[in-house]
Length: 322
Length: 313
Image 1 (tube, chains in turn blue, brown):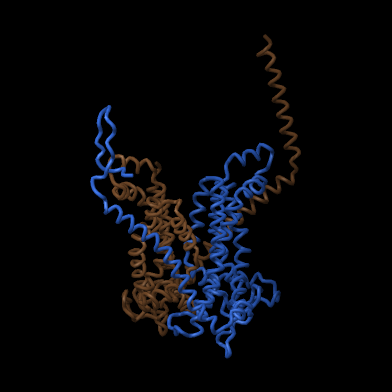
Image 2 (image 1 turned 180 degrees about the vertical axis):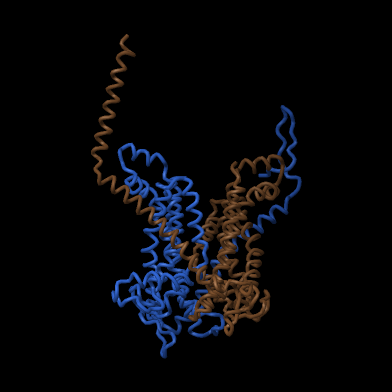
């Protein structure tokens, strides 16, 4: 189909002359090829990630049995003999993520409902970008804030005495990192959920009002369920971000691998093990080097599952209202 | 002819009925409902306030803590463990600027190219194009430290084998933010209405001429916004750089291809923040102020750009 070129027009009668390009337009095809290459580069990136993870991971499993890795509960790579039970640091990650979500889900959803249902347009137009600024703050700054402010100035004074071992005098704890991560993901949840709620058609709300529903009921019983897939997608995406967050956990959660969900214990997360261990000068063939990739594979698979669920859900919610 | 006369009492009757029903409804609404509504709205407002308070507390704390170290030394002096009162961020600032320059050089052509391919050329019914699309969405949410692993295994060592040089760090960051740029550029390109393209094609322009002279100029503000946001993300990213060599305590001005090592702003802040002594904590906070000022300026500019040049067709 050549839509370009010389379209000789004859006023009336004769059959329309065929549209034909005046040249073969090799340049156009070359450009299309170059642009396609740019798109393919993204697939190559994923392939490269998978390849670079798999090679050393297989090498790692030749030394450490896969069962010991996946189901072991002691993570002590520096001991002799070393033990690589990844559950200890997986639980460390989940510990921090859990407290982060406990903070971010109510705050994020509350902010989203407020902005979408209650706030006047002007308030919404100011508050939303300000919240999005929060998403642009480097995580190293949030980690610093978590360890030097949230921990000593907020958690320690509020924490009830010796409950769960007490918070006093601890330099690192999962809860501080969790709250830092919570602060980081509030804008993700608030922004995406607000988009989903704003996309709910007005008619649904007005129908509910006509039946005598109060504003709170409309928000909770009508808008919230109608936007549910978008809301869940935002939460799943936020979990994925929380699992993969590095700097906040390195700075605030410590590096003591422990199989615990206790919020006031120091723990080690998967990301902080990677960041602390793989600092450049580590010898390439060593078991420590390979363990970084094995942990990276676990993390990659966990976040991949989360991302896929999130993408699925967003698609569904788009199909309904676009 | 009882029409108009008869309709007046009928109207009255209807109005009275409606009023009675409404009053009955309102009276039926127990005071509990009113209270519940107010409490609910209050809780929602509290959520917004807590989120904003977190942001404000972060800014105030960084400023209060880093204020004593704010001086020109911070920008002009290299880091020092012996003299923390004279230590600064000079090599880190230069390193970050060079990293960002590399990111822009890579991400601009490749990101826009991929977006143009997906929006203008790709046939959505082909499975490989859907794979590319899904793949980009997923890449955008891969943890940054995984990109660090990619950089370590693929760029620093492995196939590219660049070594621990600044250019390797730059390429790693570029791959990290590429999906963001592609997604933003696609949205900007999609916002250009089809009639513009049809008009251009009808006048005899080729597809590429249409893109170059119509589609791209119209989508520049959107693309620029996306690129600025992506660059500011790259500027603040620490974790992947730790894996690709930016850990060295660098006291000289780094260059892109020198094997002597390099540093970057967030890595230097991290380095100071890890030291428990008060002077280094102050330096870390001062570095955070510097970085936040730059990032907030960039983000505000991006938002302003989006609002100023947003075209309504």
